[in-house]
Every structure is written in C-alpha cells, then in structure tokens.
Length: 323
Ligand code: ADP
Ligand code: TRP
Image 1 (tube, rainbow, N blue to C red):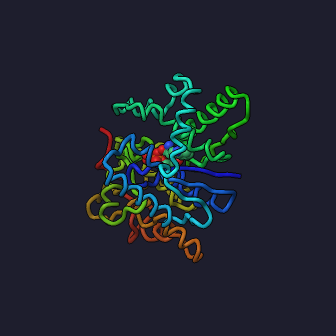
Image 2 (image 1 turned 90 degrees about the vertical axis):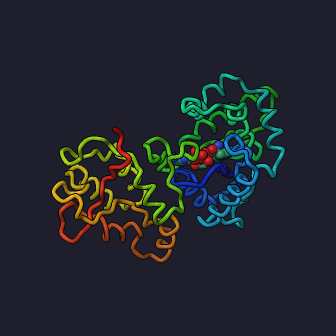
Image 3 (image 1 turned 60 degrees about the vertical axis):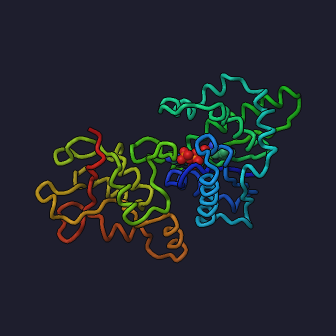
C-alpha cells in the first residue's frame, strides 16, 4: 500500500498540523510505502518571497525529522523537485469541470475571509490531485479540511480514466486522525492562513502569551459554568490530557470549579490546562521511557479544583473573550 501526504511550508507548523496530520504520518511510516513531501508549490499561493519560502521549507523538514519521520523508512521530499507533477496538473485541469473547483469549501472559506484569490488558489485542488495521483497513492492521511480535496482527486482520476478509456489512475482514499479538526485561538480551524495557531515548538513566554489569547465564552463564569463541549480551552486541553484528566476536568467545568475564585481572584497562583508543559516530543520521549506522561505530571502539579488549599487551579482566560 502506498501512503502519501504533504504539508505546505506557509508558516510555522502548529498543533492542528501535528494532531491532524503529522502524528499520523510519523505513525504510518511503519506501515506500507510512505511518501511525504513539503508542498512548496502550494505554499506559493500565500508565500512569495524566495528567502522566506526557503527558510520555511527547511523548517518543515526539520520539524518532521524532529517529530520522528525517518527518511530511511519513508521517502521525504520537496514537491517542486518533481516537476512532472505540475505537468500532470495541467492534464488533469483539462478533464476537470469548473463546477467541481467552485464547490471547494477551503477555497470558499478563504474568499469569505477576504483573501483575494489567485488562479493558483482556485486550481489548488488540481495540483493536489496531481501530487496524489502521480505516485498512484492508495491512502492519503490528512486533517478534516483536506478530505474534500482528496475526494476531488478521486473525481479527477475517474474523469481522466473515463476520458481515455483506461485505468491510468488509482482511486485514493483519505484517512483522518481521531482529532481531525483542531480549533485555533479564535475557535475556528487552527490554520497558518488564519493567524490563530499554537506553534508546535512554542514554549516559555511566547507560549504563555499565545495561550493567553485563546478566546473563551463571554458569559460570567463566576455565576454559571462554562460548557466544556463548546469551550476552546477544554478542546485544546483534551489533546494533551489523559482520559482520567479529561474526566476530572469535565467534572470541574460542570461544577464550575475552573477559573479564579470570585472571592480571591488576585491572590491565587494560577495556571491553566495544557499550559505548555507538554510538547508532542516530550510525550514521545516519556512514552519510550515509560515514565508518567508529561500531561499526567503537569496535572498533578497544576490542575486542581478551585479552593483546594495549596493546589493551583487552572485559570479561565479572560483576555481574549468575545464581547
Ligand atoms: P494550514 O491550514 O495551517 O496551512 P496545511 O494546509 O499545510 O495547514 O495542512 C497540513 C496538514 O495539516 C493537512 O493534512 C491538514 O488537513 C492538517 N491540518 C491543518 N490544520 C489542521 C487543524 N486545525 N486540525 C486538524 N488538521 C489540520
Ligand atoms: N493541501 C494540503 C494542505 O494544505 C497539502 C498538500 C498538497 C497535500 N498536496 C497534497 C496533502 C497531497 C495530501 C496530499 O494541507
């Protein structure tokens, strides 16, 4: 089985990229024949300064290697090093109806956000289909937002095969991770294009600042509990927490035990769930050494119901609240 996926070097890789895609890529390299690439041609739809694109391309390469992609196991390459892909993109564009591309949700979202589209942004799914079909890929592990693009590649393969009366292309299937859509700081999909990301390797003050800008519900949490099912901080916390921690935190939300105590808001030492103590890499190292997970440790150190003496409760972030 041939497994292929790509990531654009259009900004610093973030938790959405990790939990939606990279984690799968690293895991799947042990199954089947893996091909992973840096989609620099796709990134040209947003980044056009050559030095910046080169730097970001190297960053993506370093990030993948740091997160465990082994070039001895999987083929790891740069999209533009295979120029035949752009040639195939043209051939596919000639069997692709405008209507198919006009239905692309990712394109429509970008337009809705006020991004001025180029022809490249519009035909982005055709280049992506060429990436997939040229290597006769069977499986494409991606995040939720890319599933439709893989379906479009299926349509293009079918149209091409029908037009030329031969099964030239294999039908690719997408695969989603359990966490297929990670919310960003503003609650929308975390994305480099939306400036709402938590970078994978952010730490220290920078991480604290980013986490501090997560948007939460505007209701008065001192009077009624926040809903863990719609709360952004909770959603991000669950990415790192163990099952026991998630259950406990959900209980704390429902019982309105999260947040600074209304009685003594300023005297309490506070922290918040998932406050950056655990990186995916730390988690992996700990899994190898079979020690307590980073999230387990940070939970013991920092997460507790409000009001327990000597223990620090997570704080609901107020700064980024919707008004
Ligand atoms: P971005 O939207 O930040 O530019 P990419 O388009 O380069 O990210 O996405 C690379 C991979 O990461 C794709 O498989 C994509 O589906 C996945 N991905 C991106 N953002 C998220 C997210 N917020 N949640 C889950 N997966 C995501
Ligand atoms: N469009 C993908 C993204 O933004 C990146 C990508 C380009 C890709 N070509 C691909 C992903 C082929 C999977 C298969 O995430």
